[in-house]
Length: 149
Image 1 (cartoon, rainbow, N blue to C red):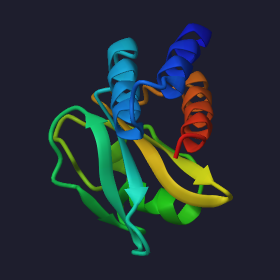
Image 2: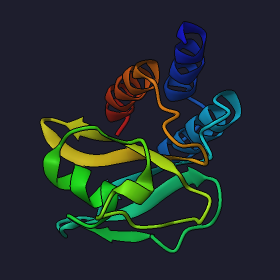
Image 3: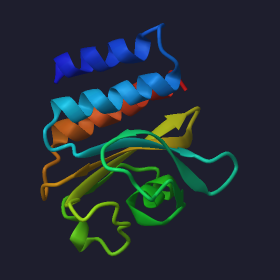
């Protein structure tokens, strides 16, 4: 995991790429390195609106380009300000289905100056794949991402 953190840091610190390109590269790296990450993307607060807007991502196309606060896992994290790990999306009543293949999801908020400004959202085609190590990595990553936003 420390090798992956080094590679993620080098992407975020790269002077050659703009923020959007860096986030896209982060999605690609996570998608390549962690086999059970099947959709990896960022959502950000949409201006002053109580909604999220889709940012860079890797995976199947999604209809969920705008998510109202409170709706689905991403919308809940926008309100709760806490990481949400869903081992089995079929057990979650407020789940917004992006893909029939999605079995689990983890969403980690991104804070800037104490405000929840976005999140990383990862779907998996496996039930209960996410480890404590994954959660720690993603919480670390969101903290690092906030420094470039």
